[in-house]
Length: 203
Image (tube, rainbow, N blue to C red):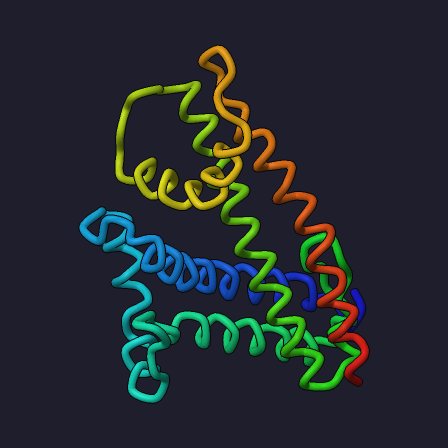
């Protein structure tokens, strides 16, 4: 066993722990923006797990247009810290969306640009997964409601609403999720690589 024996498991632990918490913080931001049901048990769970660091950040970070921006700052900070830790492990590159980001060869500003790309990718991924879950649940248990489905519907709505204005239901069949999923996947292919490229220029 070589010197890199522990790198893979440590990398897995870092990615898993950071990604899970970043997801919770960003979900809190999205649910706040989308005015989701605050009393939903899942919402309460997310709020309790993310309140401590956000309460501290709010002392220094002002709201913008009445919106709490501290979750975005915390997400970017956590992503940046994750990238720094991966660099210390001599991880040369990571995958963000459909693009490869060479975190080992860029400067600190370039690394921050990668953080923005990662957050954009996370946003699109959340919308994509929410739509897929909504479609699956409409097949498995149509008409039923539970706290998770309520939040999933809230998260899927911003991506489905504009598509439904263009593509109405045909014969009672709603095709908008298919087109919304396709558009999100295309957006990831078109939006993420240019941001990665910009960051790669900043050595």
